[in-house]
Image (cartoon, rainbow, N blue to C red):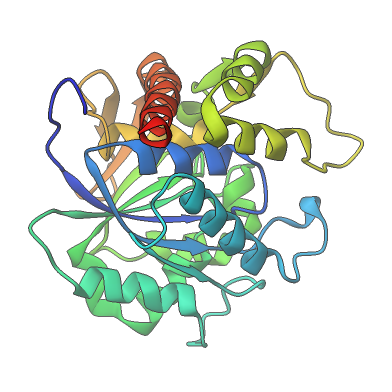
Length: 287
């Protein structure tokens, strides 16, 4: 039992290219372990070609998300759907992930809904194209783009630029943007991450296996720090934003751009959540 009972504050849909960089899986685990969150859907998007041919990767990402939710004992708490392995077309198409987003928005509850996307905006764009009326009924928290401009050189944007442009053109949609300059502030040393995951219960070991099994092009060289930028939106879902800083953009009063994110809060909370989950699991199995 938690020392303090934490009230739920957000319904959350999580969308990411789960078969890509494993820091997305860290973000999924962190959101799932946050007692203030109620995850209602998980959707999987296409991956950047740098991780190999994209065919089948969205489905593979959905399967990874399901596996992780199983390990977290959260299987049944949220629907999991894969989107297409191709970029936004601007035409309505069959997309189970987009449909899951639409259904989550329609299923109104007492808690506000935040759609956390830490990858390309493909599924979000497909959902808004198919059902434009949902735009004013949820908030998007997107890890992507740059404070220098939406089309600046940034990974999540350039995985599907057309989707990002379509989503940001919708003036009914409330957006908290975590641009490159903000999400790169969420870093942990490789040594600390390695130690925490190996010793952080079956959840940590599962994540550790995916970090060490990551296949990347030869030109990518790792340094002593690892960015956990996909966890940045925790400050507007499972945590609080009081120690982060957002500026309202000139484009719309419904748009905010994160200028500073409290990386210490996010990283410390993730590591503590791993330890607490391990303790609860040990107590359950011992009982």
